[in-house]
Amino acid sequence: MADLLVCVDLSEHSVPVLRAAGELAALTGATLHVLHVAAGEPAFMGYDPPGGVHDREDHAIEVEHERVQLDVLISDAGLDDRAERLVVSGPITEAIIEVAGGVDASIVIVGRHGNGGILSRLIGSVAIDLVGRCPRPVLVVPVS
Image (cartoon, rainbow, N blue to C red; front, side):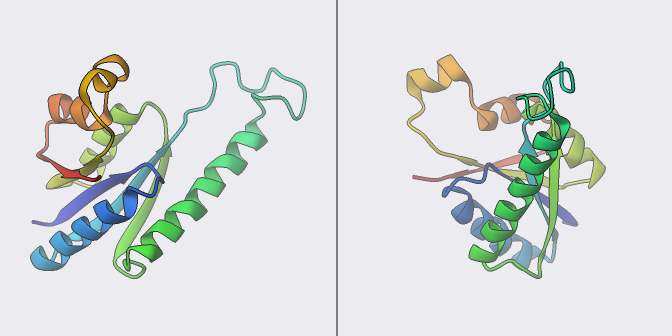
């Protein structure tokens, strides 16, 4: 096993997922890549007046803020020196699959939280979508 890709959403549920991924990486000697997929740029970005909701600078500031949040989560999980940080923008499942291919991940690790049931059917779930679409093995870590 050479590379693990762990995907986080910057919620408090991310730390247990990161810890589980860190343990697996330590046991196998794998390289750990930690990915957060930020929201993509709006379709009409740049057409608002400065300071508008579609301002490129605002989007860049938000992505940088998410990078800082990712660093804090990685630190909270005790993985400061063992994890490569990745932040990309775009549709979540597609971005994860693309990054997994780019780092040649042996396993993609995601957390599954929430109550599932009808909510998952209505809104969908990244974990469920990934299991169905990702050409690589997906490890789902349940988080309560």
